[in-house]
Length: 221
Image 1 (spheres, rainbow, N blue to C red):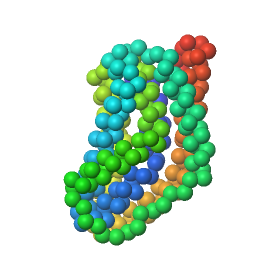
Image 2: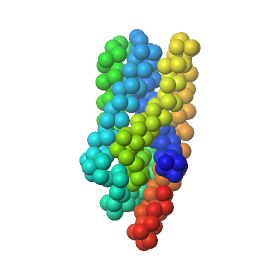
Image 3: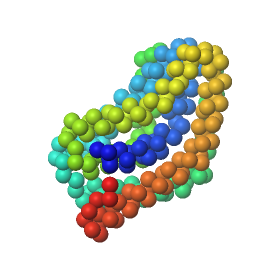
Image 4: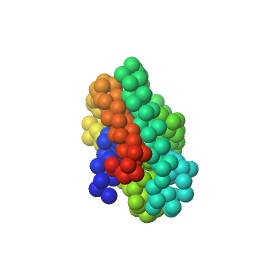
């Protein structure tokens, strides 16, 4: 389990650095119910992300058999993901992010939950670190219940940094708007620099892990 989390932590960091969710939380912070709506967006995103992870894992293979018996396909998937991550990491250097415009908007908590879910599902095709994390979980010798617990823990850890938004709104009130916009700008600039590096490192690790298995039949992770 420790070895699995040693692999998942850098993937998780690469996943979190993507500023898309934070941008939508800043959007929710500018609505008429900023604390409730930002919490609702985060809840909707986390639940949708978790459920999507289960569906993806089940789609790759029957979870009960697959989690107990890692197969060649896991390493083929890992190798392909590694190559894609390297390519996306290269392209990310040229990617420009845009900042949300500041204005007051009306939104209900239910719509906010829906927005969080939509953000999660719309971003799923581009959530390469999440796919890499699922691949690592599928390779681990875990029971189905343990695997679901690890996936849940991953999603909770993913959501934790974003709890900063409702907490900041609740403690700072209207002043939080300027602070959040500054954090969002900072996160975008940091992600433009850090995310390509993290994606490249994760991609290289997956490729090396797969090549070692192809050549020797033994796992690196």
